[in-house]
Image 1 (tube, rainbow over the protein chains, first blue to last red):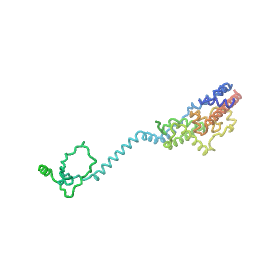
Image 2 (image 1 turned 135 degrees about the vertical axis):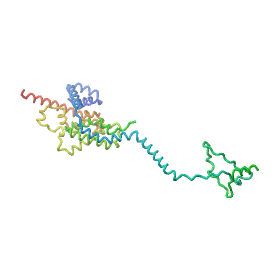
Image 3 (image 1 turned 120 degrees about the vertical axis):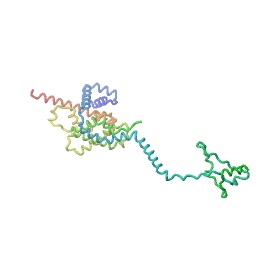
Amino acid sequence: MKDLHLETLSALFDGESVDPDILAEALADPQAPSALRQFAACRSELRQDPDRPDAEFYDSMREILRPSLFRRVVSRPLVPAALGTAVALAAGLAGFAVRPMVSPPSPEVTQGIHASSKSRGAGAVPAQPRAPRTGDEAVDSSQPATELRPADARPIGLAEWRERTAQ
Amino acid sequence: MTEHVSAAELFERYHLAVYHYFRRLTRRRDVAQDLAQEVFLRVVRDIQRYRSIGREAAWVFGIARHVLAEHRRGRQDEEQMVSGSEGVTSEAHQLLAFGIAEALDLLPHPDREMLLLREVGGFTYAEIAQIYPTSVEGVRCRLSRARGRLKDYLTRGRSSSRKHAGREPS
């Protein structure tokens, strides 16, 4: 049997692509049926091997693969969740621990307005006392956070302000 | 989205093929088990670095080839690996009932390994070419040659076996 014919039959037997013309020649070879039968017998014997490794092999492999199994279980779905939880816990704990040290002193609230209105020009209407700010009131960020107070300014009470405005 | 396989999954899929590959090549169960264990030790060790999705079998059998080569280098004198088709089998051996296992022993190492990768591992020519590494044409040629030789050995062996049986007193 020609080598080319044998090679073509071998490739055909393995499901690989073959040249149709050469295949026709190879199949016409009188030795082709016995060659194919031989290939099939060999495959059948090699693949249907009942031999299995011993129990000791599987025991030792179980030990070897255990960390891998652990890694598989742990690494896939739980890692992002575990990391998220850890970060949240750490942030919470850190915030709880730092809070007493960095919290600002409670401000002394003095209700009142400035007696002087020089800075607002002549005839200016003194500022009205603000109503207590509600939670949903928008903060005007364009204004400075603190109002500069003139050096001679003196805080007056609400009653004094009413007296002055009534005059 | 393709997900990475674990070493345990690779063991489940390929341990029997790897074991049979080694047993056919070494003709010894204990050696085959030791070598298969070594292969999966390396799989466990290197699985995090493995990135070629979809080529797990080629990767595992590539490791198997390296393990076998190391084993051969280390224990060349102790093993009964016949090197090359020119390795002459003994007369007594020829007189025994000739089977696939004995015929496989007579094949050159590369031919035998490729035939086992194909028949035991079920790899395509392209996959074997990656494992070995060689060209697809090279695999095709070697497999054809291995099968041709195997056919010859089996035919000769069986005929000599029949002749031997014919000479035996009934």
